[in-house]
Image (tube, rainbow, N blue to C red):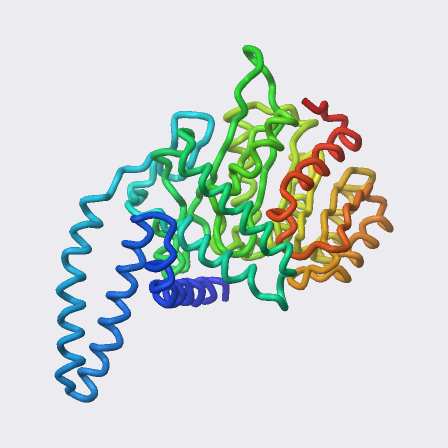
Length: 381
């Protein structure tokens, strides 16, 4: 079932990419982004004009289709010319394909991850029935700043992006590319021992700019970051927990973190992975963080979860105006956890919706740092 859904998501992504192409030509943030949009427009012309030509034998449609085909060939040449090899990174930030480093298919020429993520963010955050206008403006501003930072910062240059061929993987029903992004703070002294944050992305895909968003949190709490990728973010699918465990094991082997300072956090649908991985391996983590996150009652009420987390610390960050993850479902999960003896701390914002993480990034960072310091005894730098 999940493989079929992955193929459907991949086809949907392809349709969205083609549909948004004219927007990208007009509003792309970079020249490479506009070229990517031009590819989409040319494909649109080929599909539409070619179909009309075949059905009606229209000379005008034929000319348009042939013209689009003539444009497509040199554009492919430009794409090949602009390709750059991508690696796993040599600095504090890494992009790791754990089955094969660096992944042979990881080459890029257009920054489609940021360009399309920006377009989707601009469109989604302007939907008044989904996101309040003030939160939408704040989220767009933060996302734009994060993207500019990843484009300018030398730590991110030459990294393989998981989105390079993510659509192609999903078309083949591959949910798990065995990939993770990583970040390690600059040591303050030789041999400094870090903690670790395992962070799970939500629906969509794993975004490099979210790694940049988490850097201040990791710096303050002295945590290395591991951010695994799993398809379009359905961590409840078969293999989701295994992908999380693989990434956590990778982090343990790379940095030998202090087990008392290892956190598992999830944003939006990433919360489904947090609950399942925490039930499977409670020994891996000292605390859990749910941010605007899916909280599955059957998982959180299971014997494995309760026995592993009774008396232990969990943080829940939620907006009362969230229409993606309803506050009522979060309340039910929190009440169940508390009834089972889990030490739950809640941060509720009555004005916030589902883009709370981006709209109030500094506040969320402060909340997590304060909770970690008080509930887990993690020193605050």
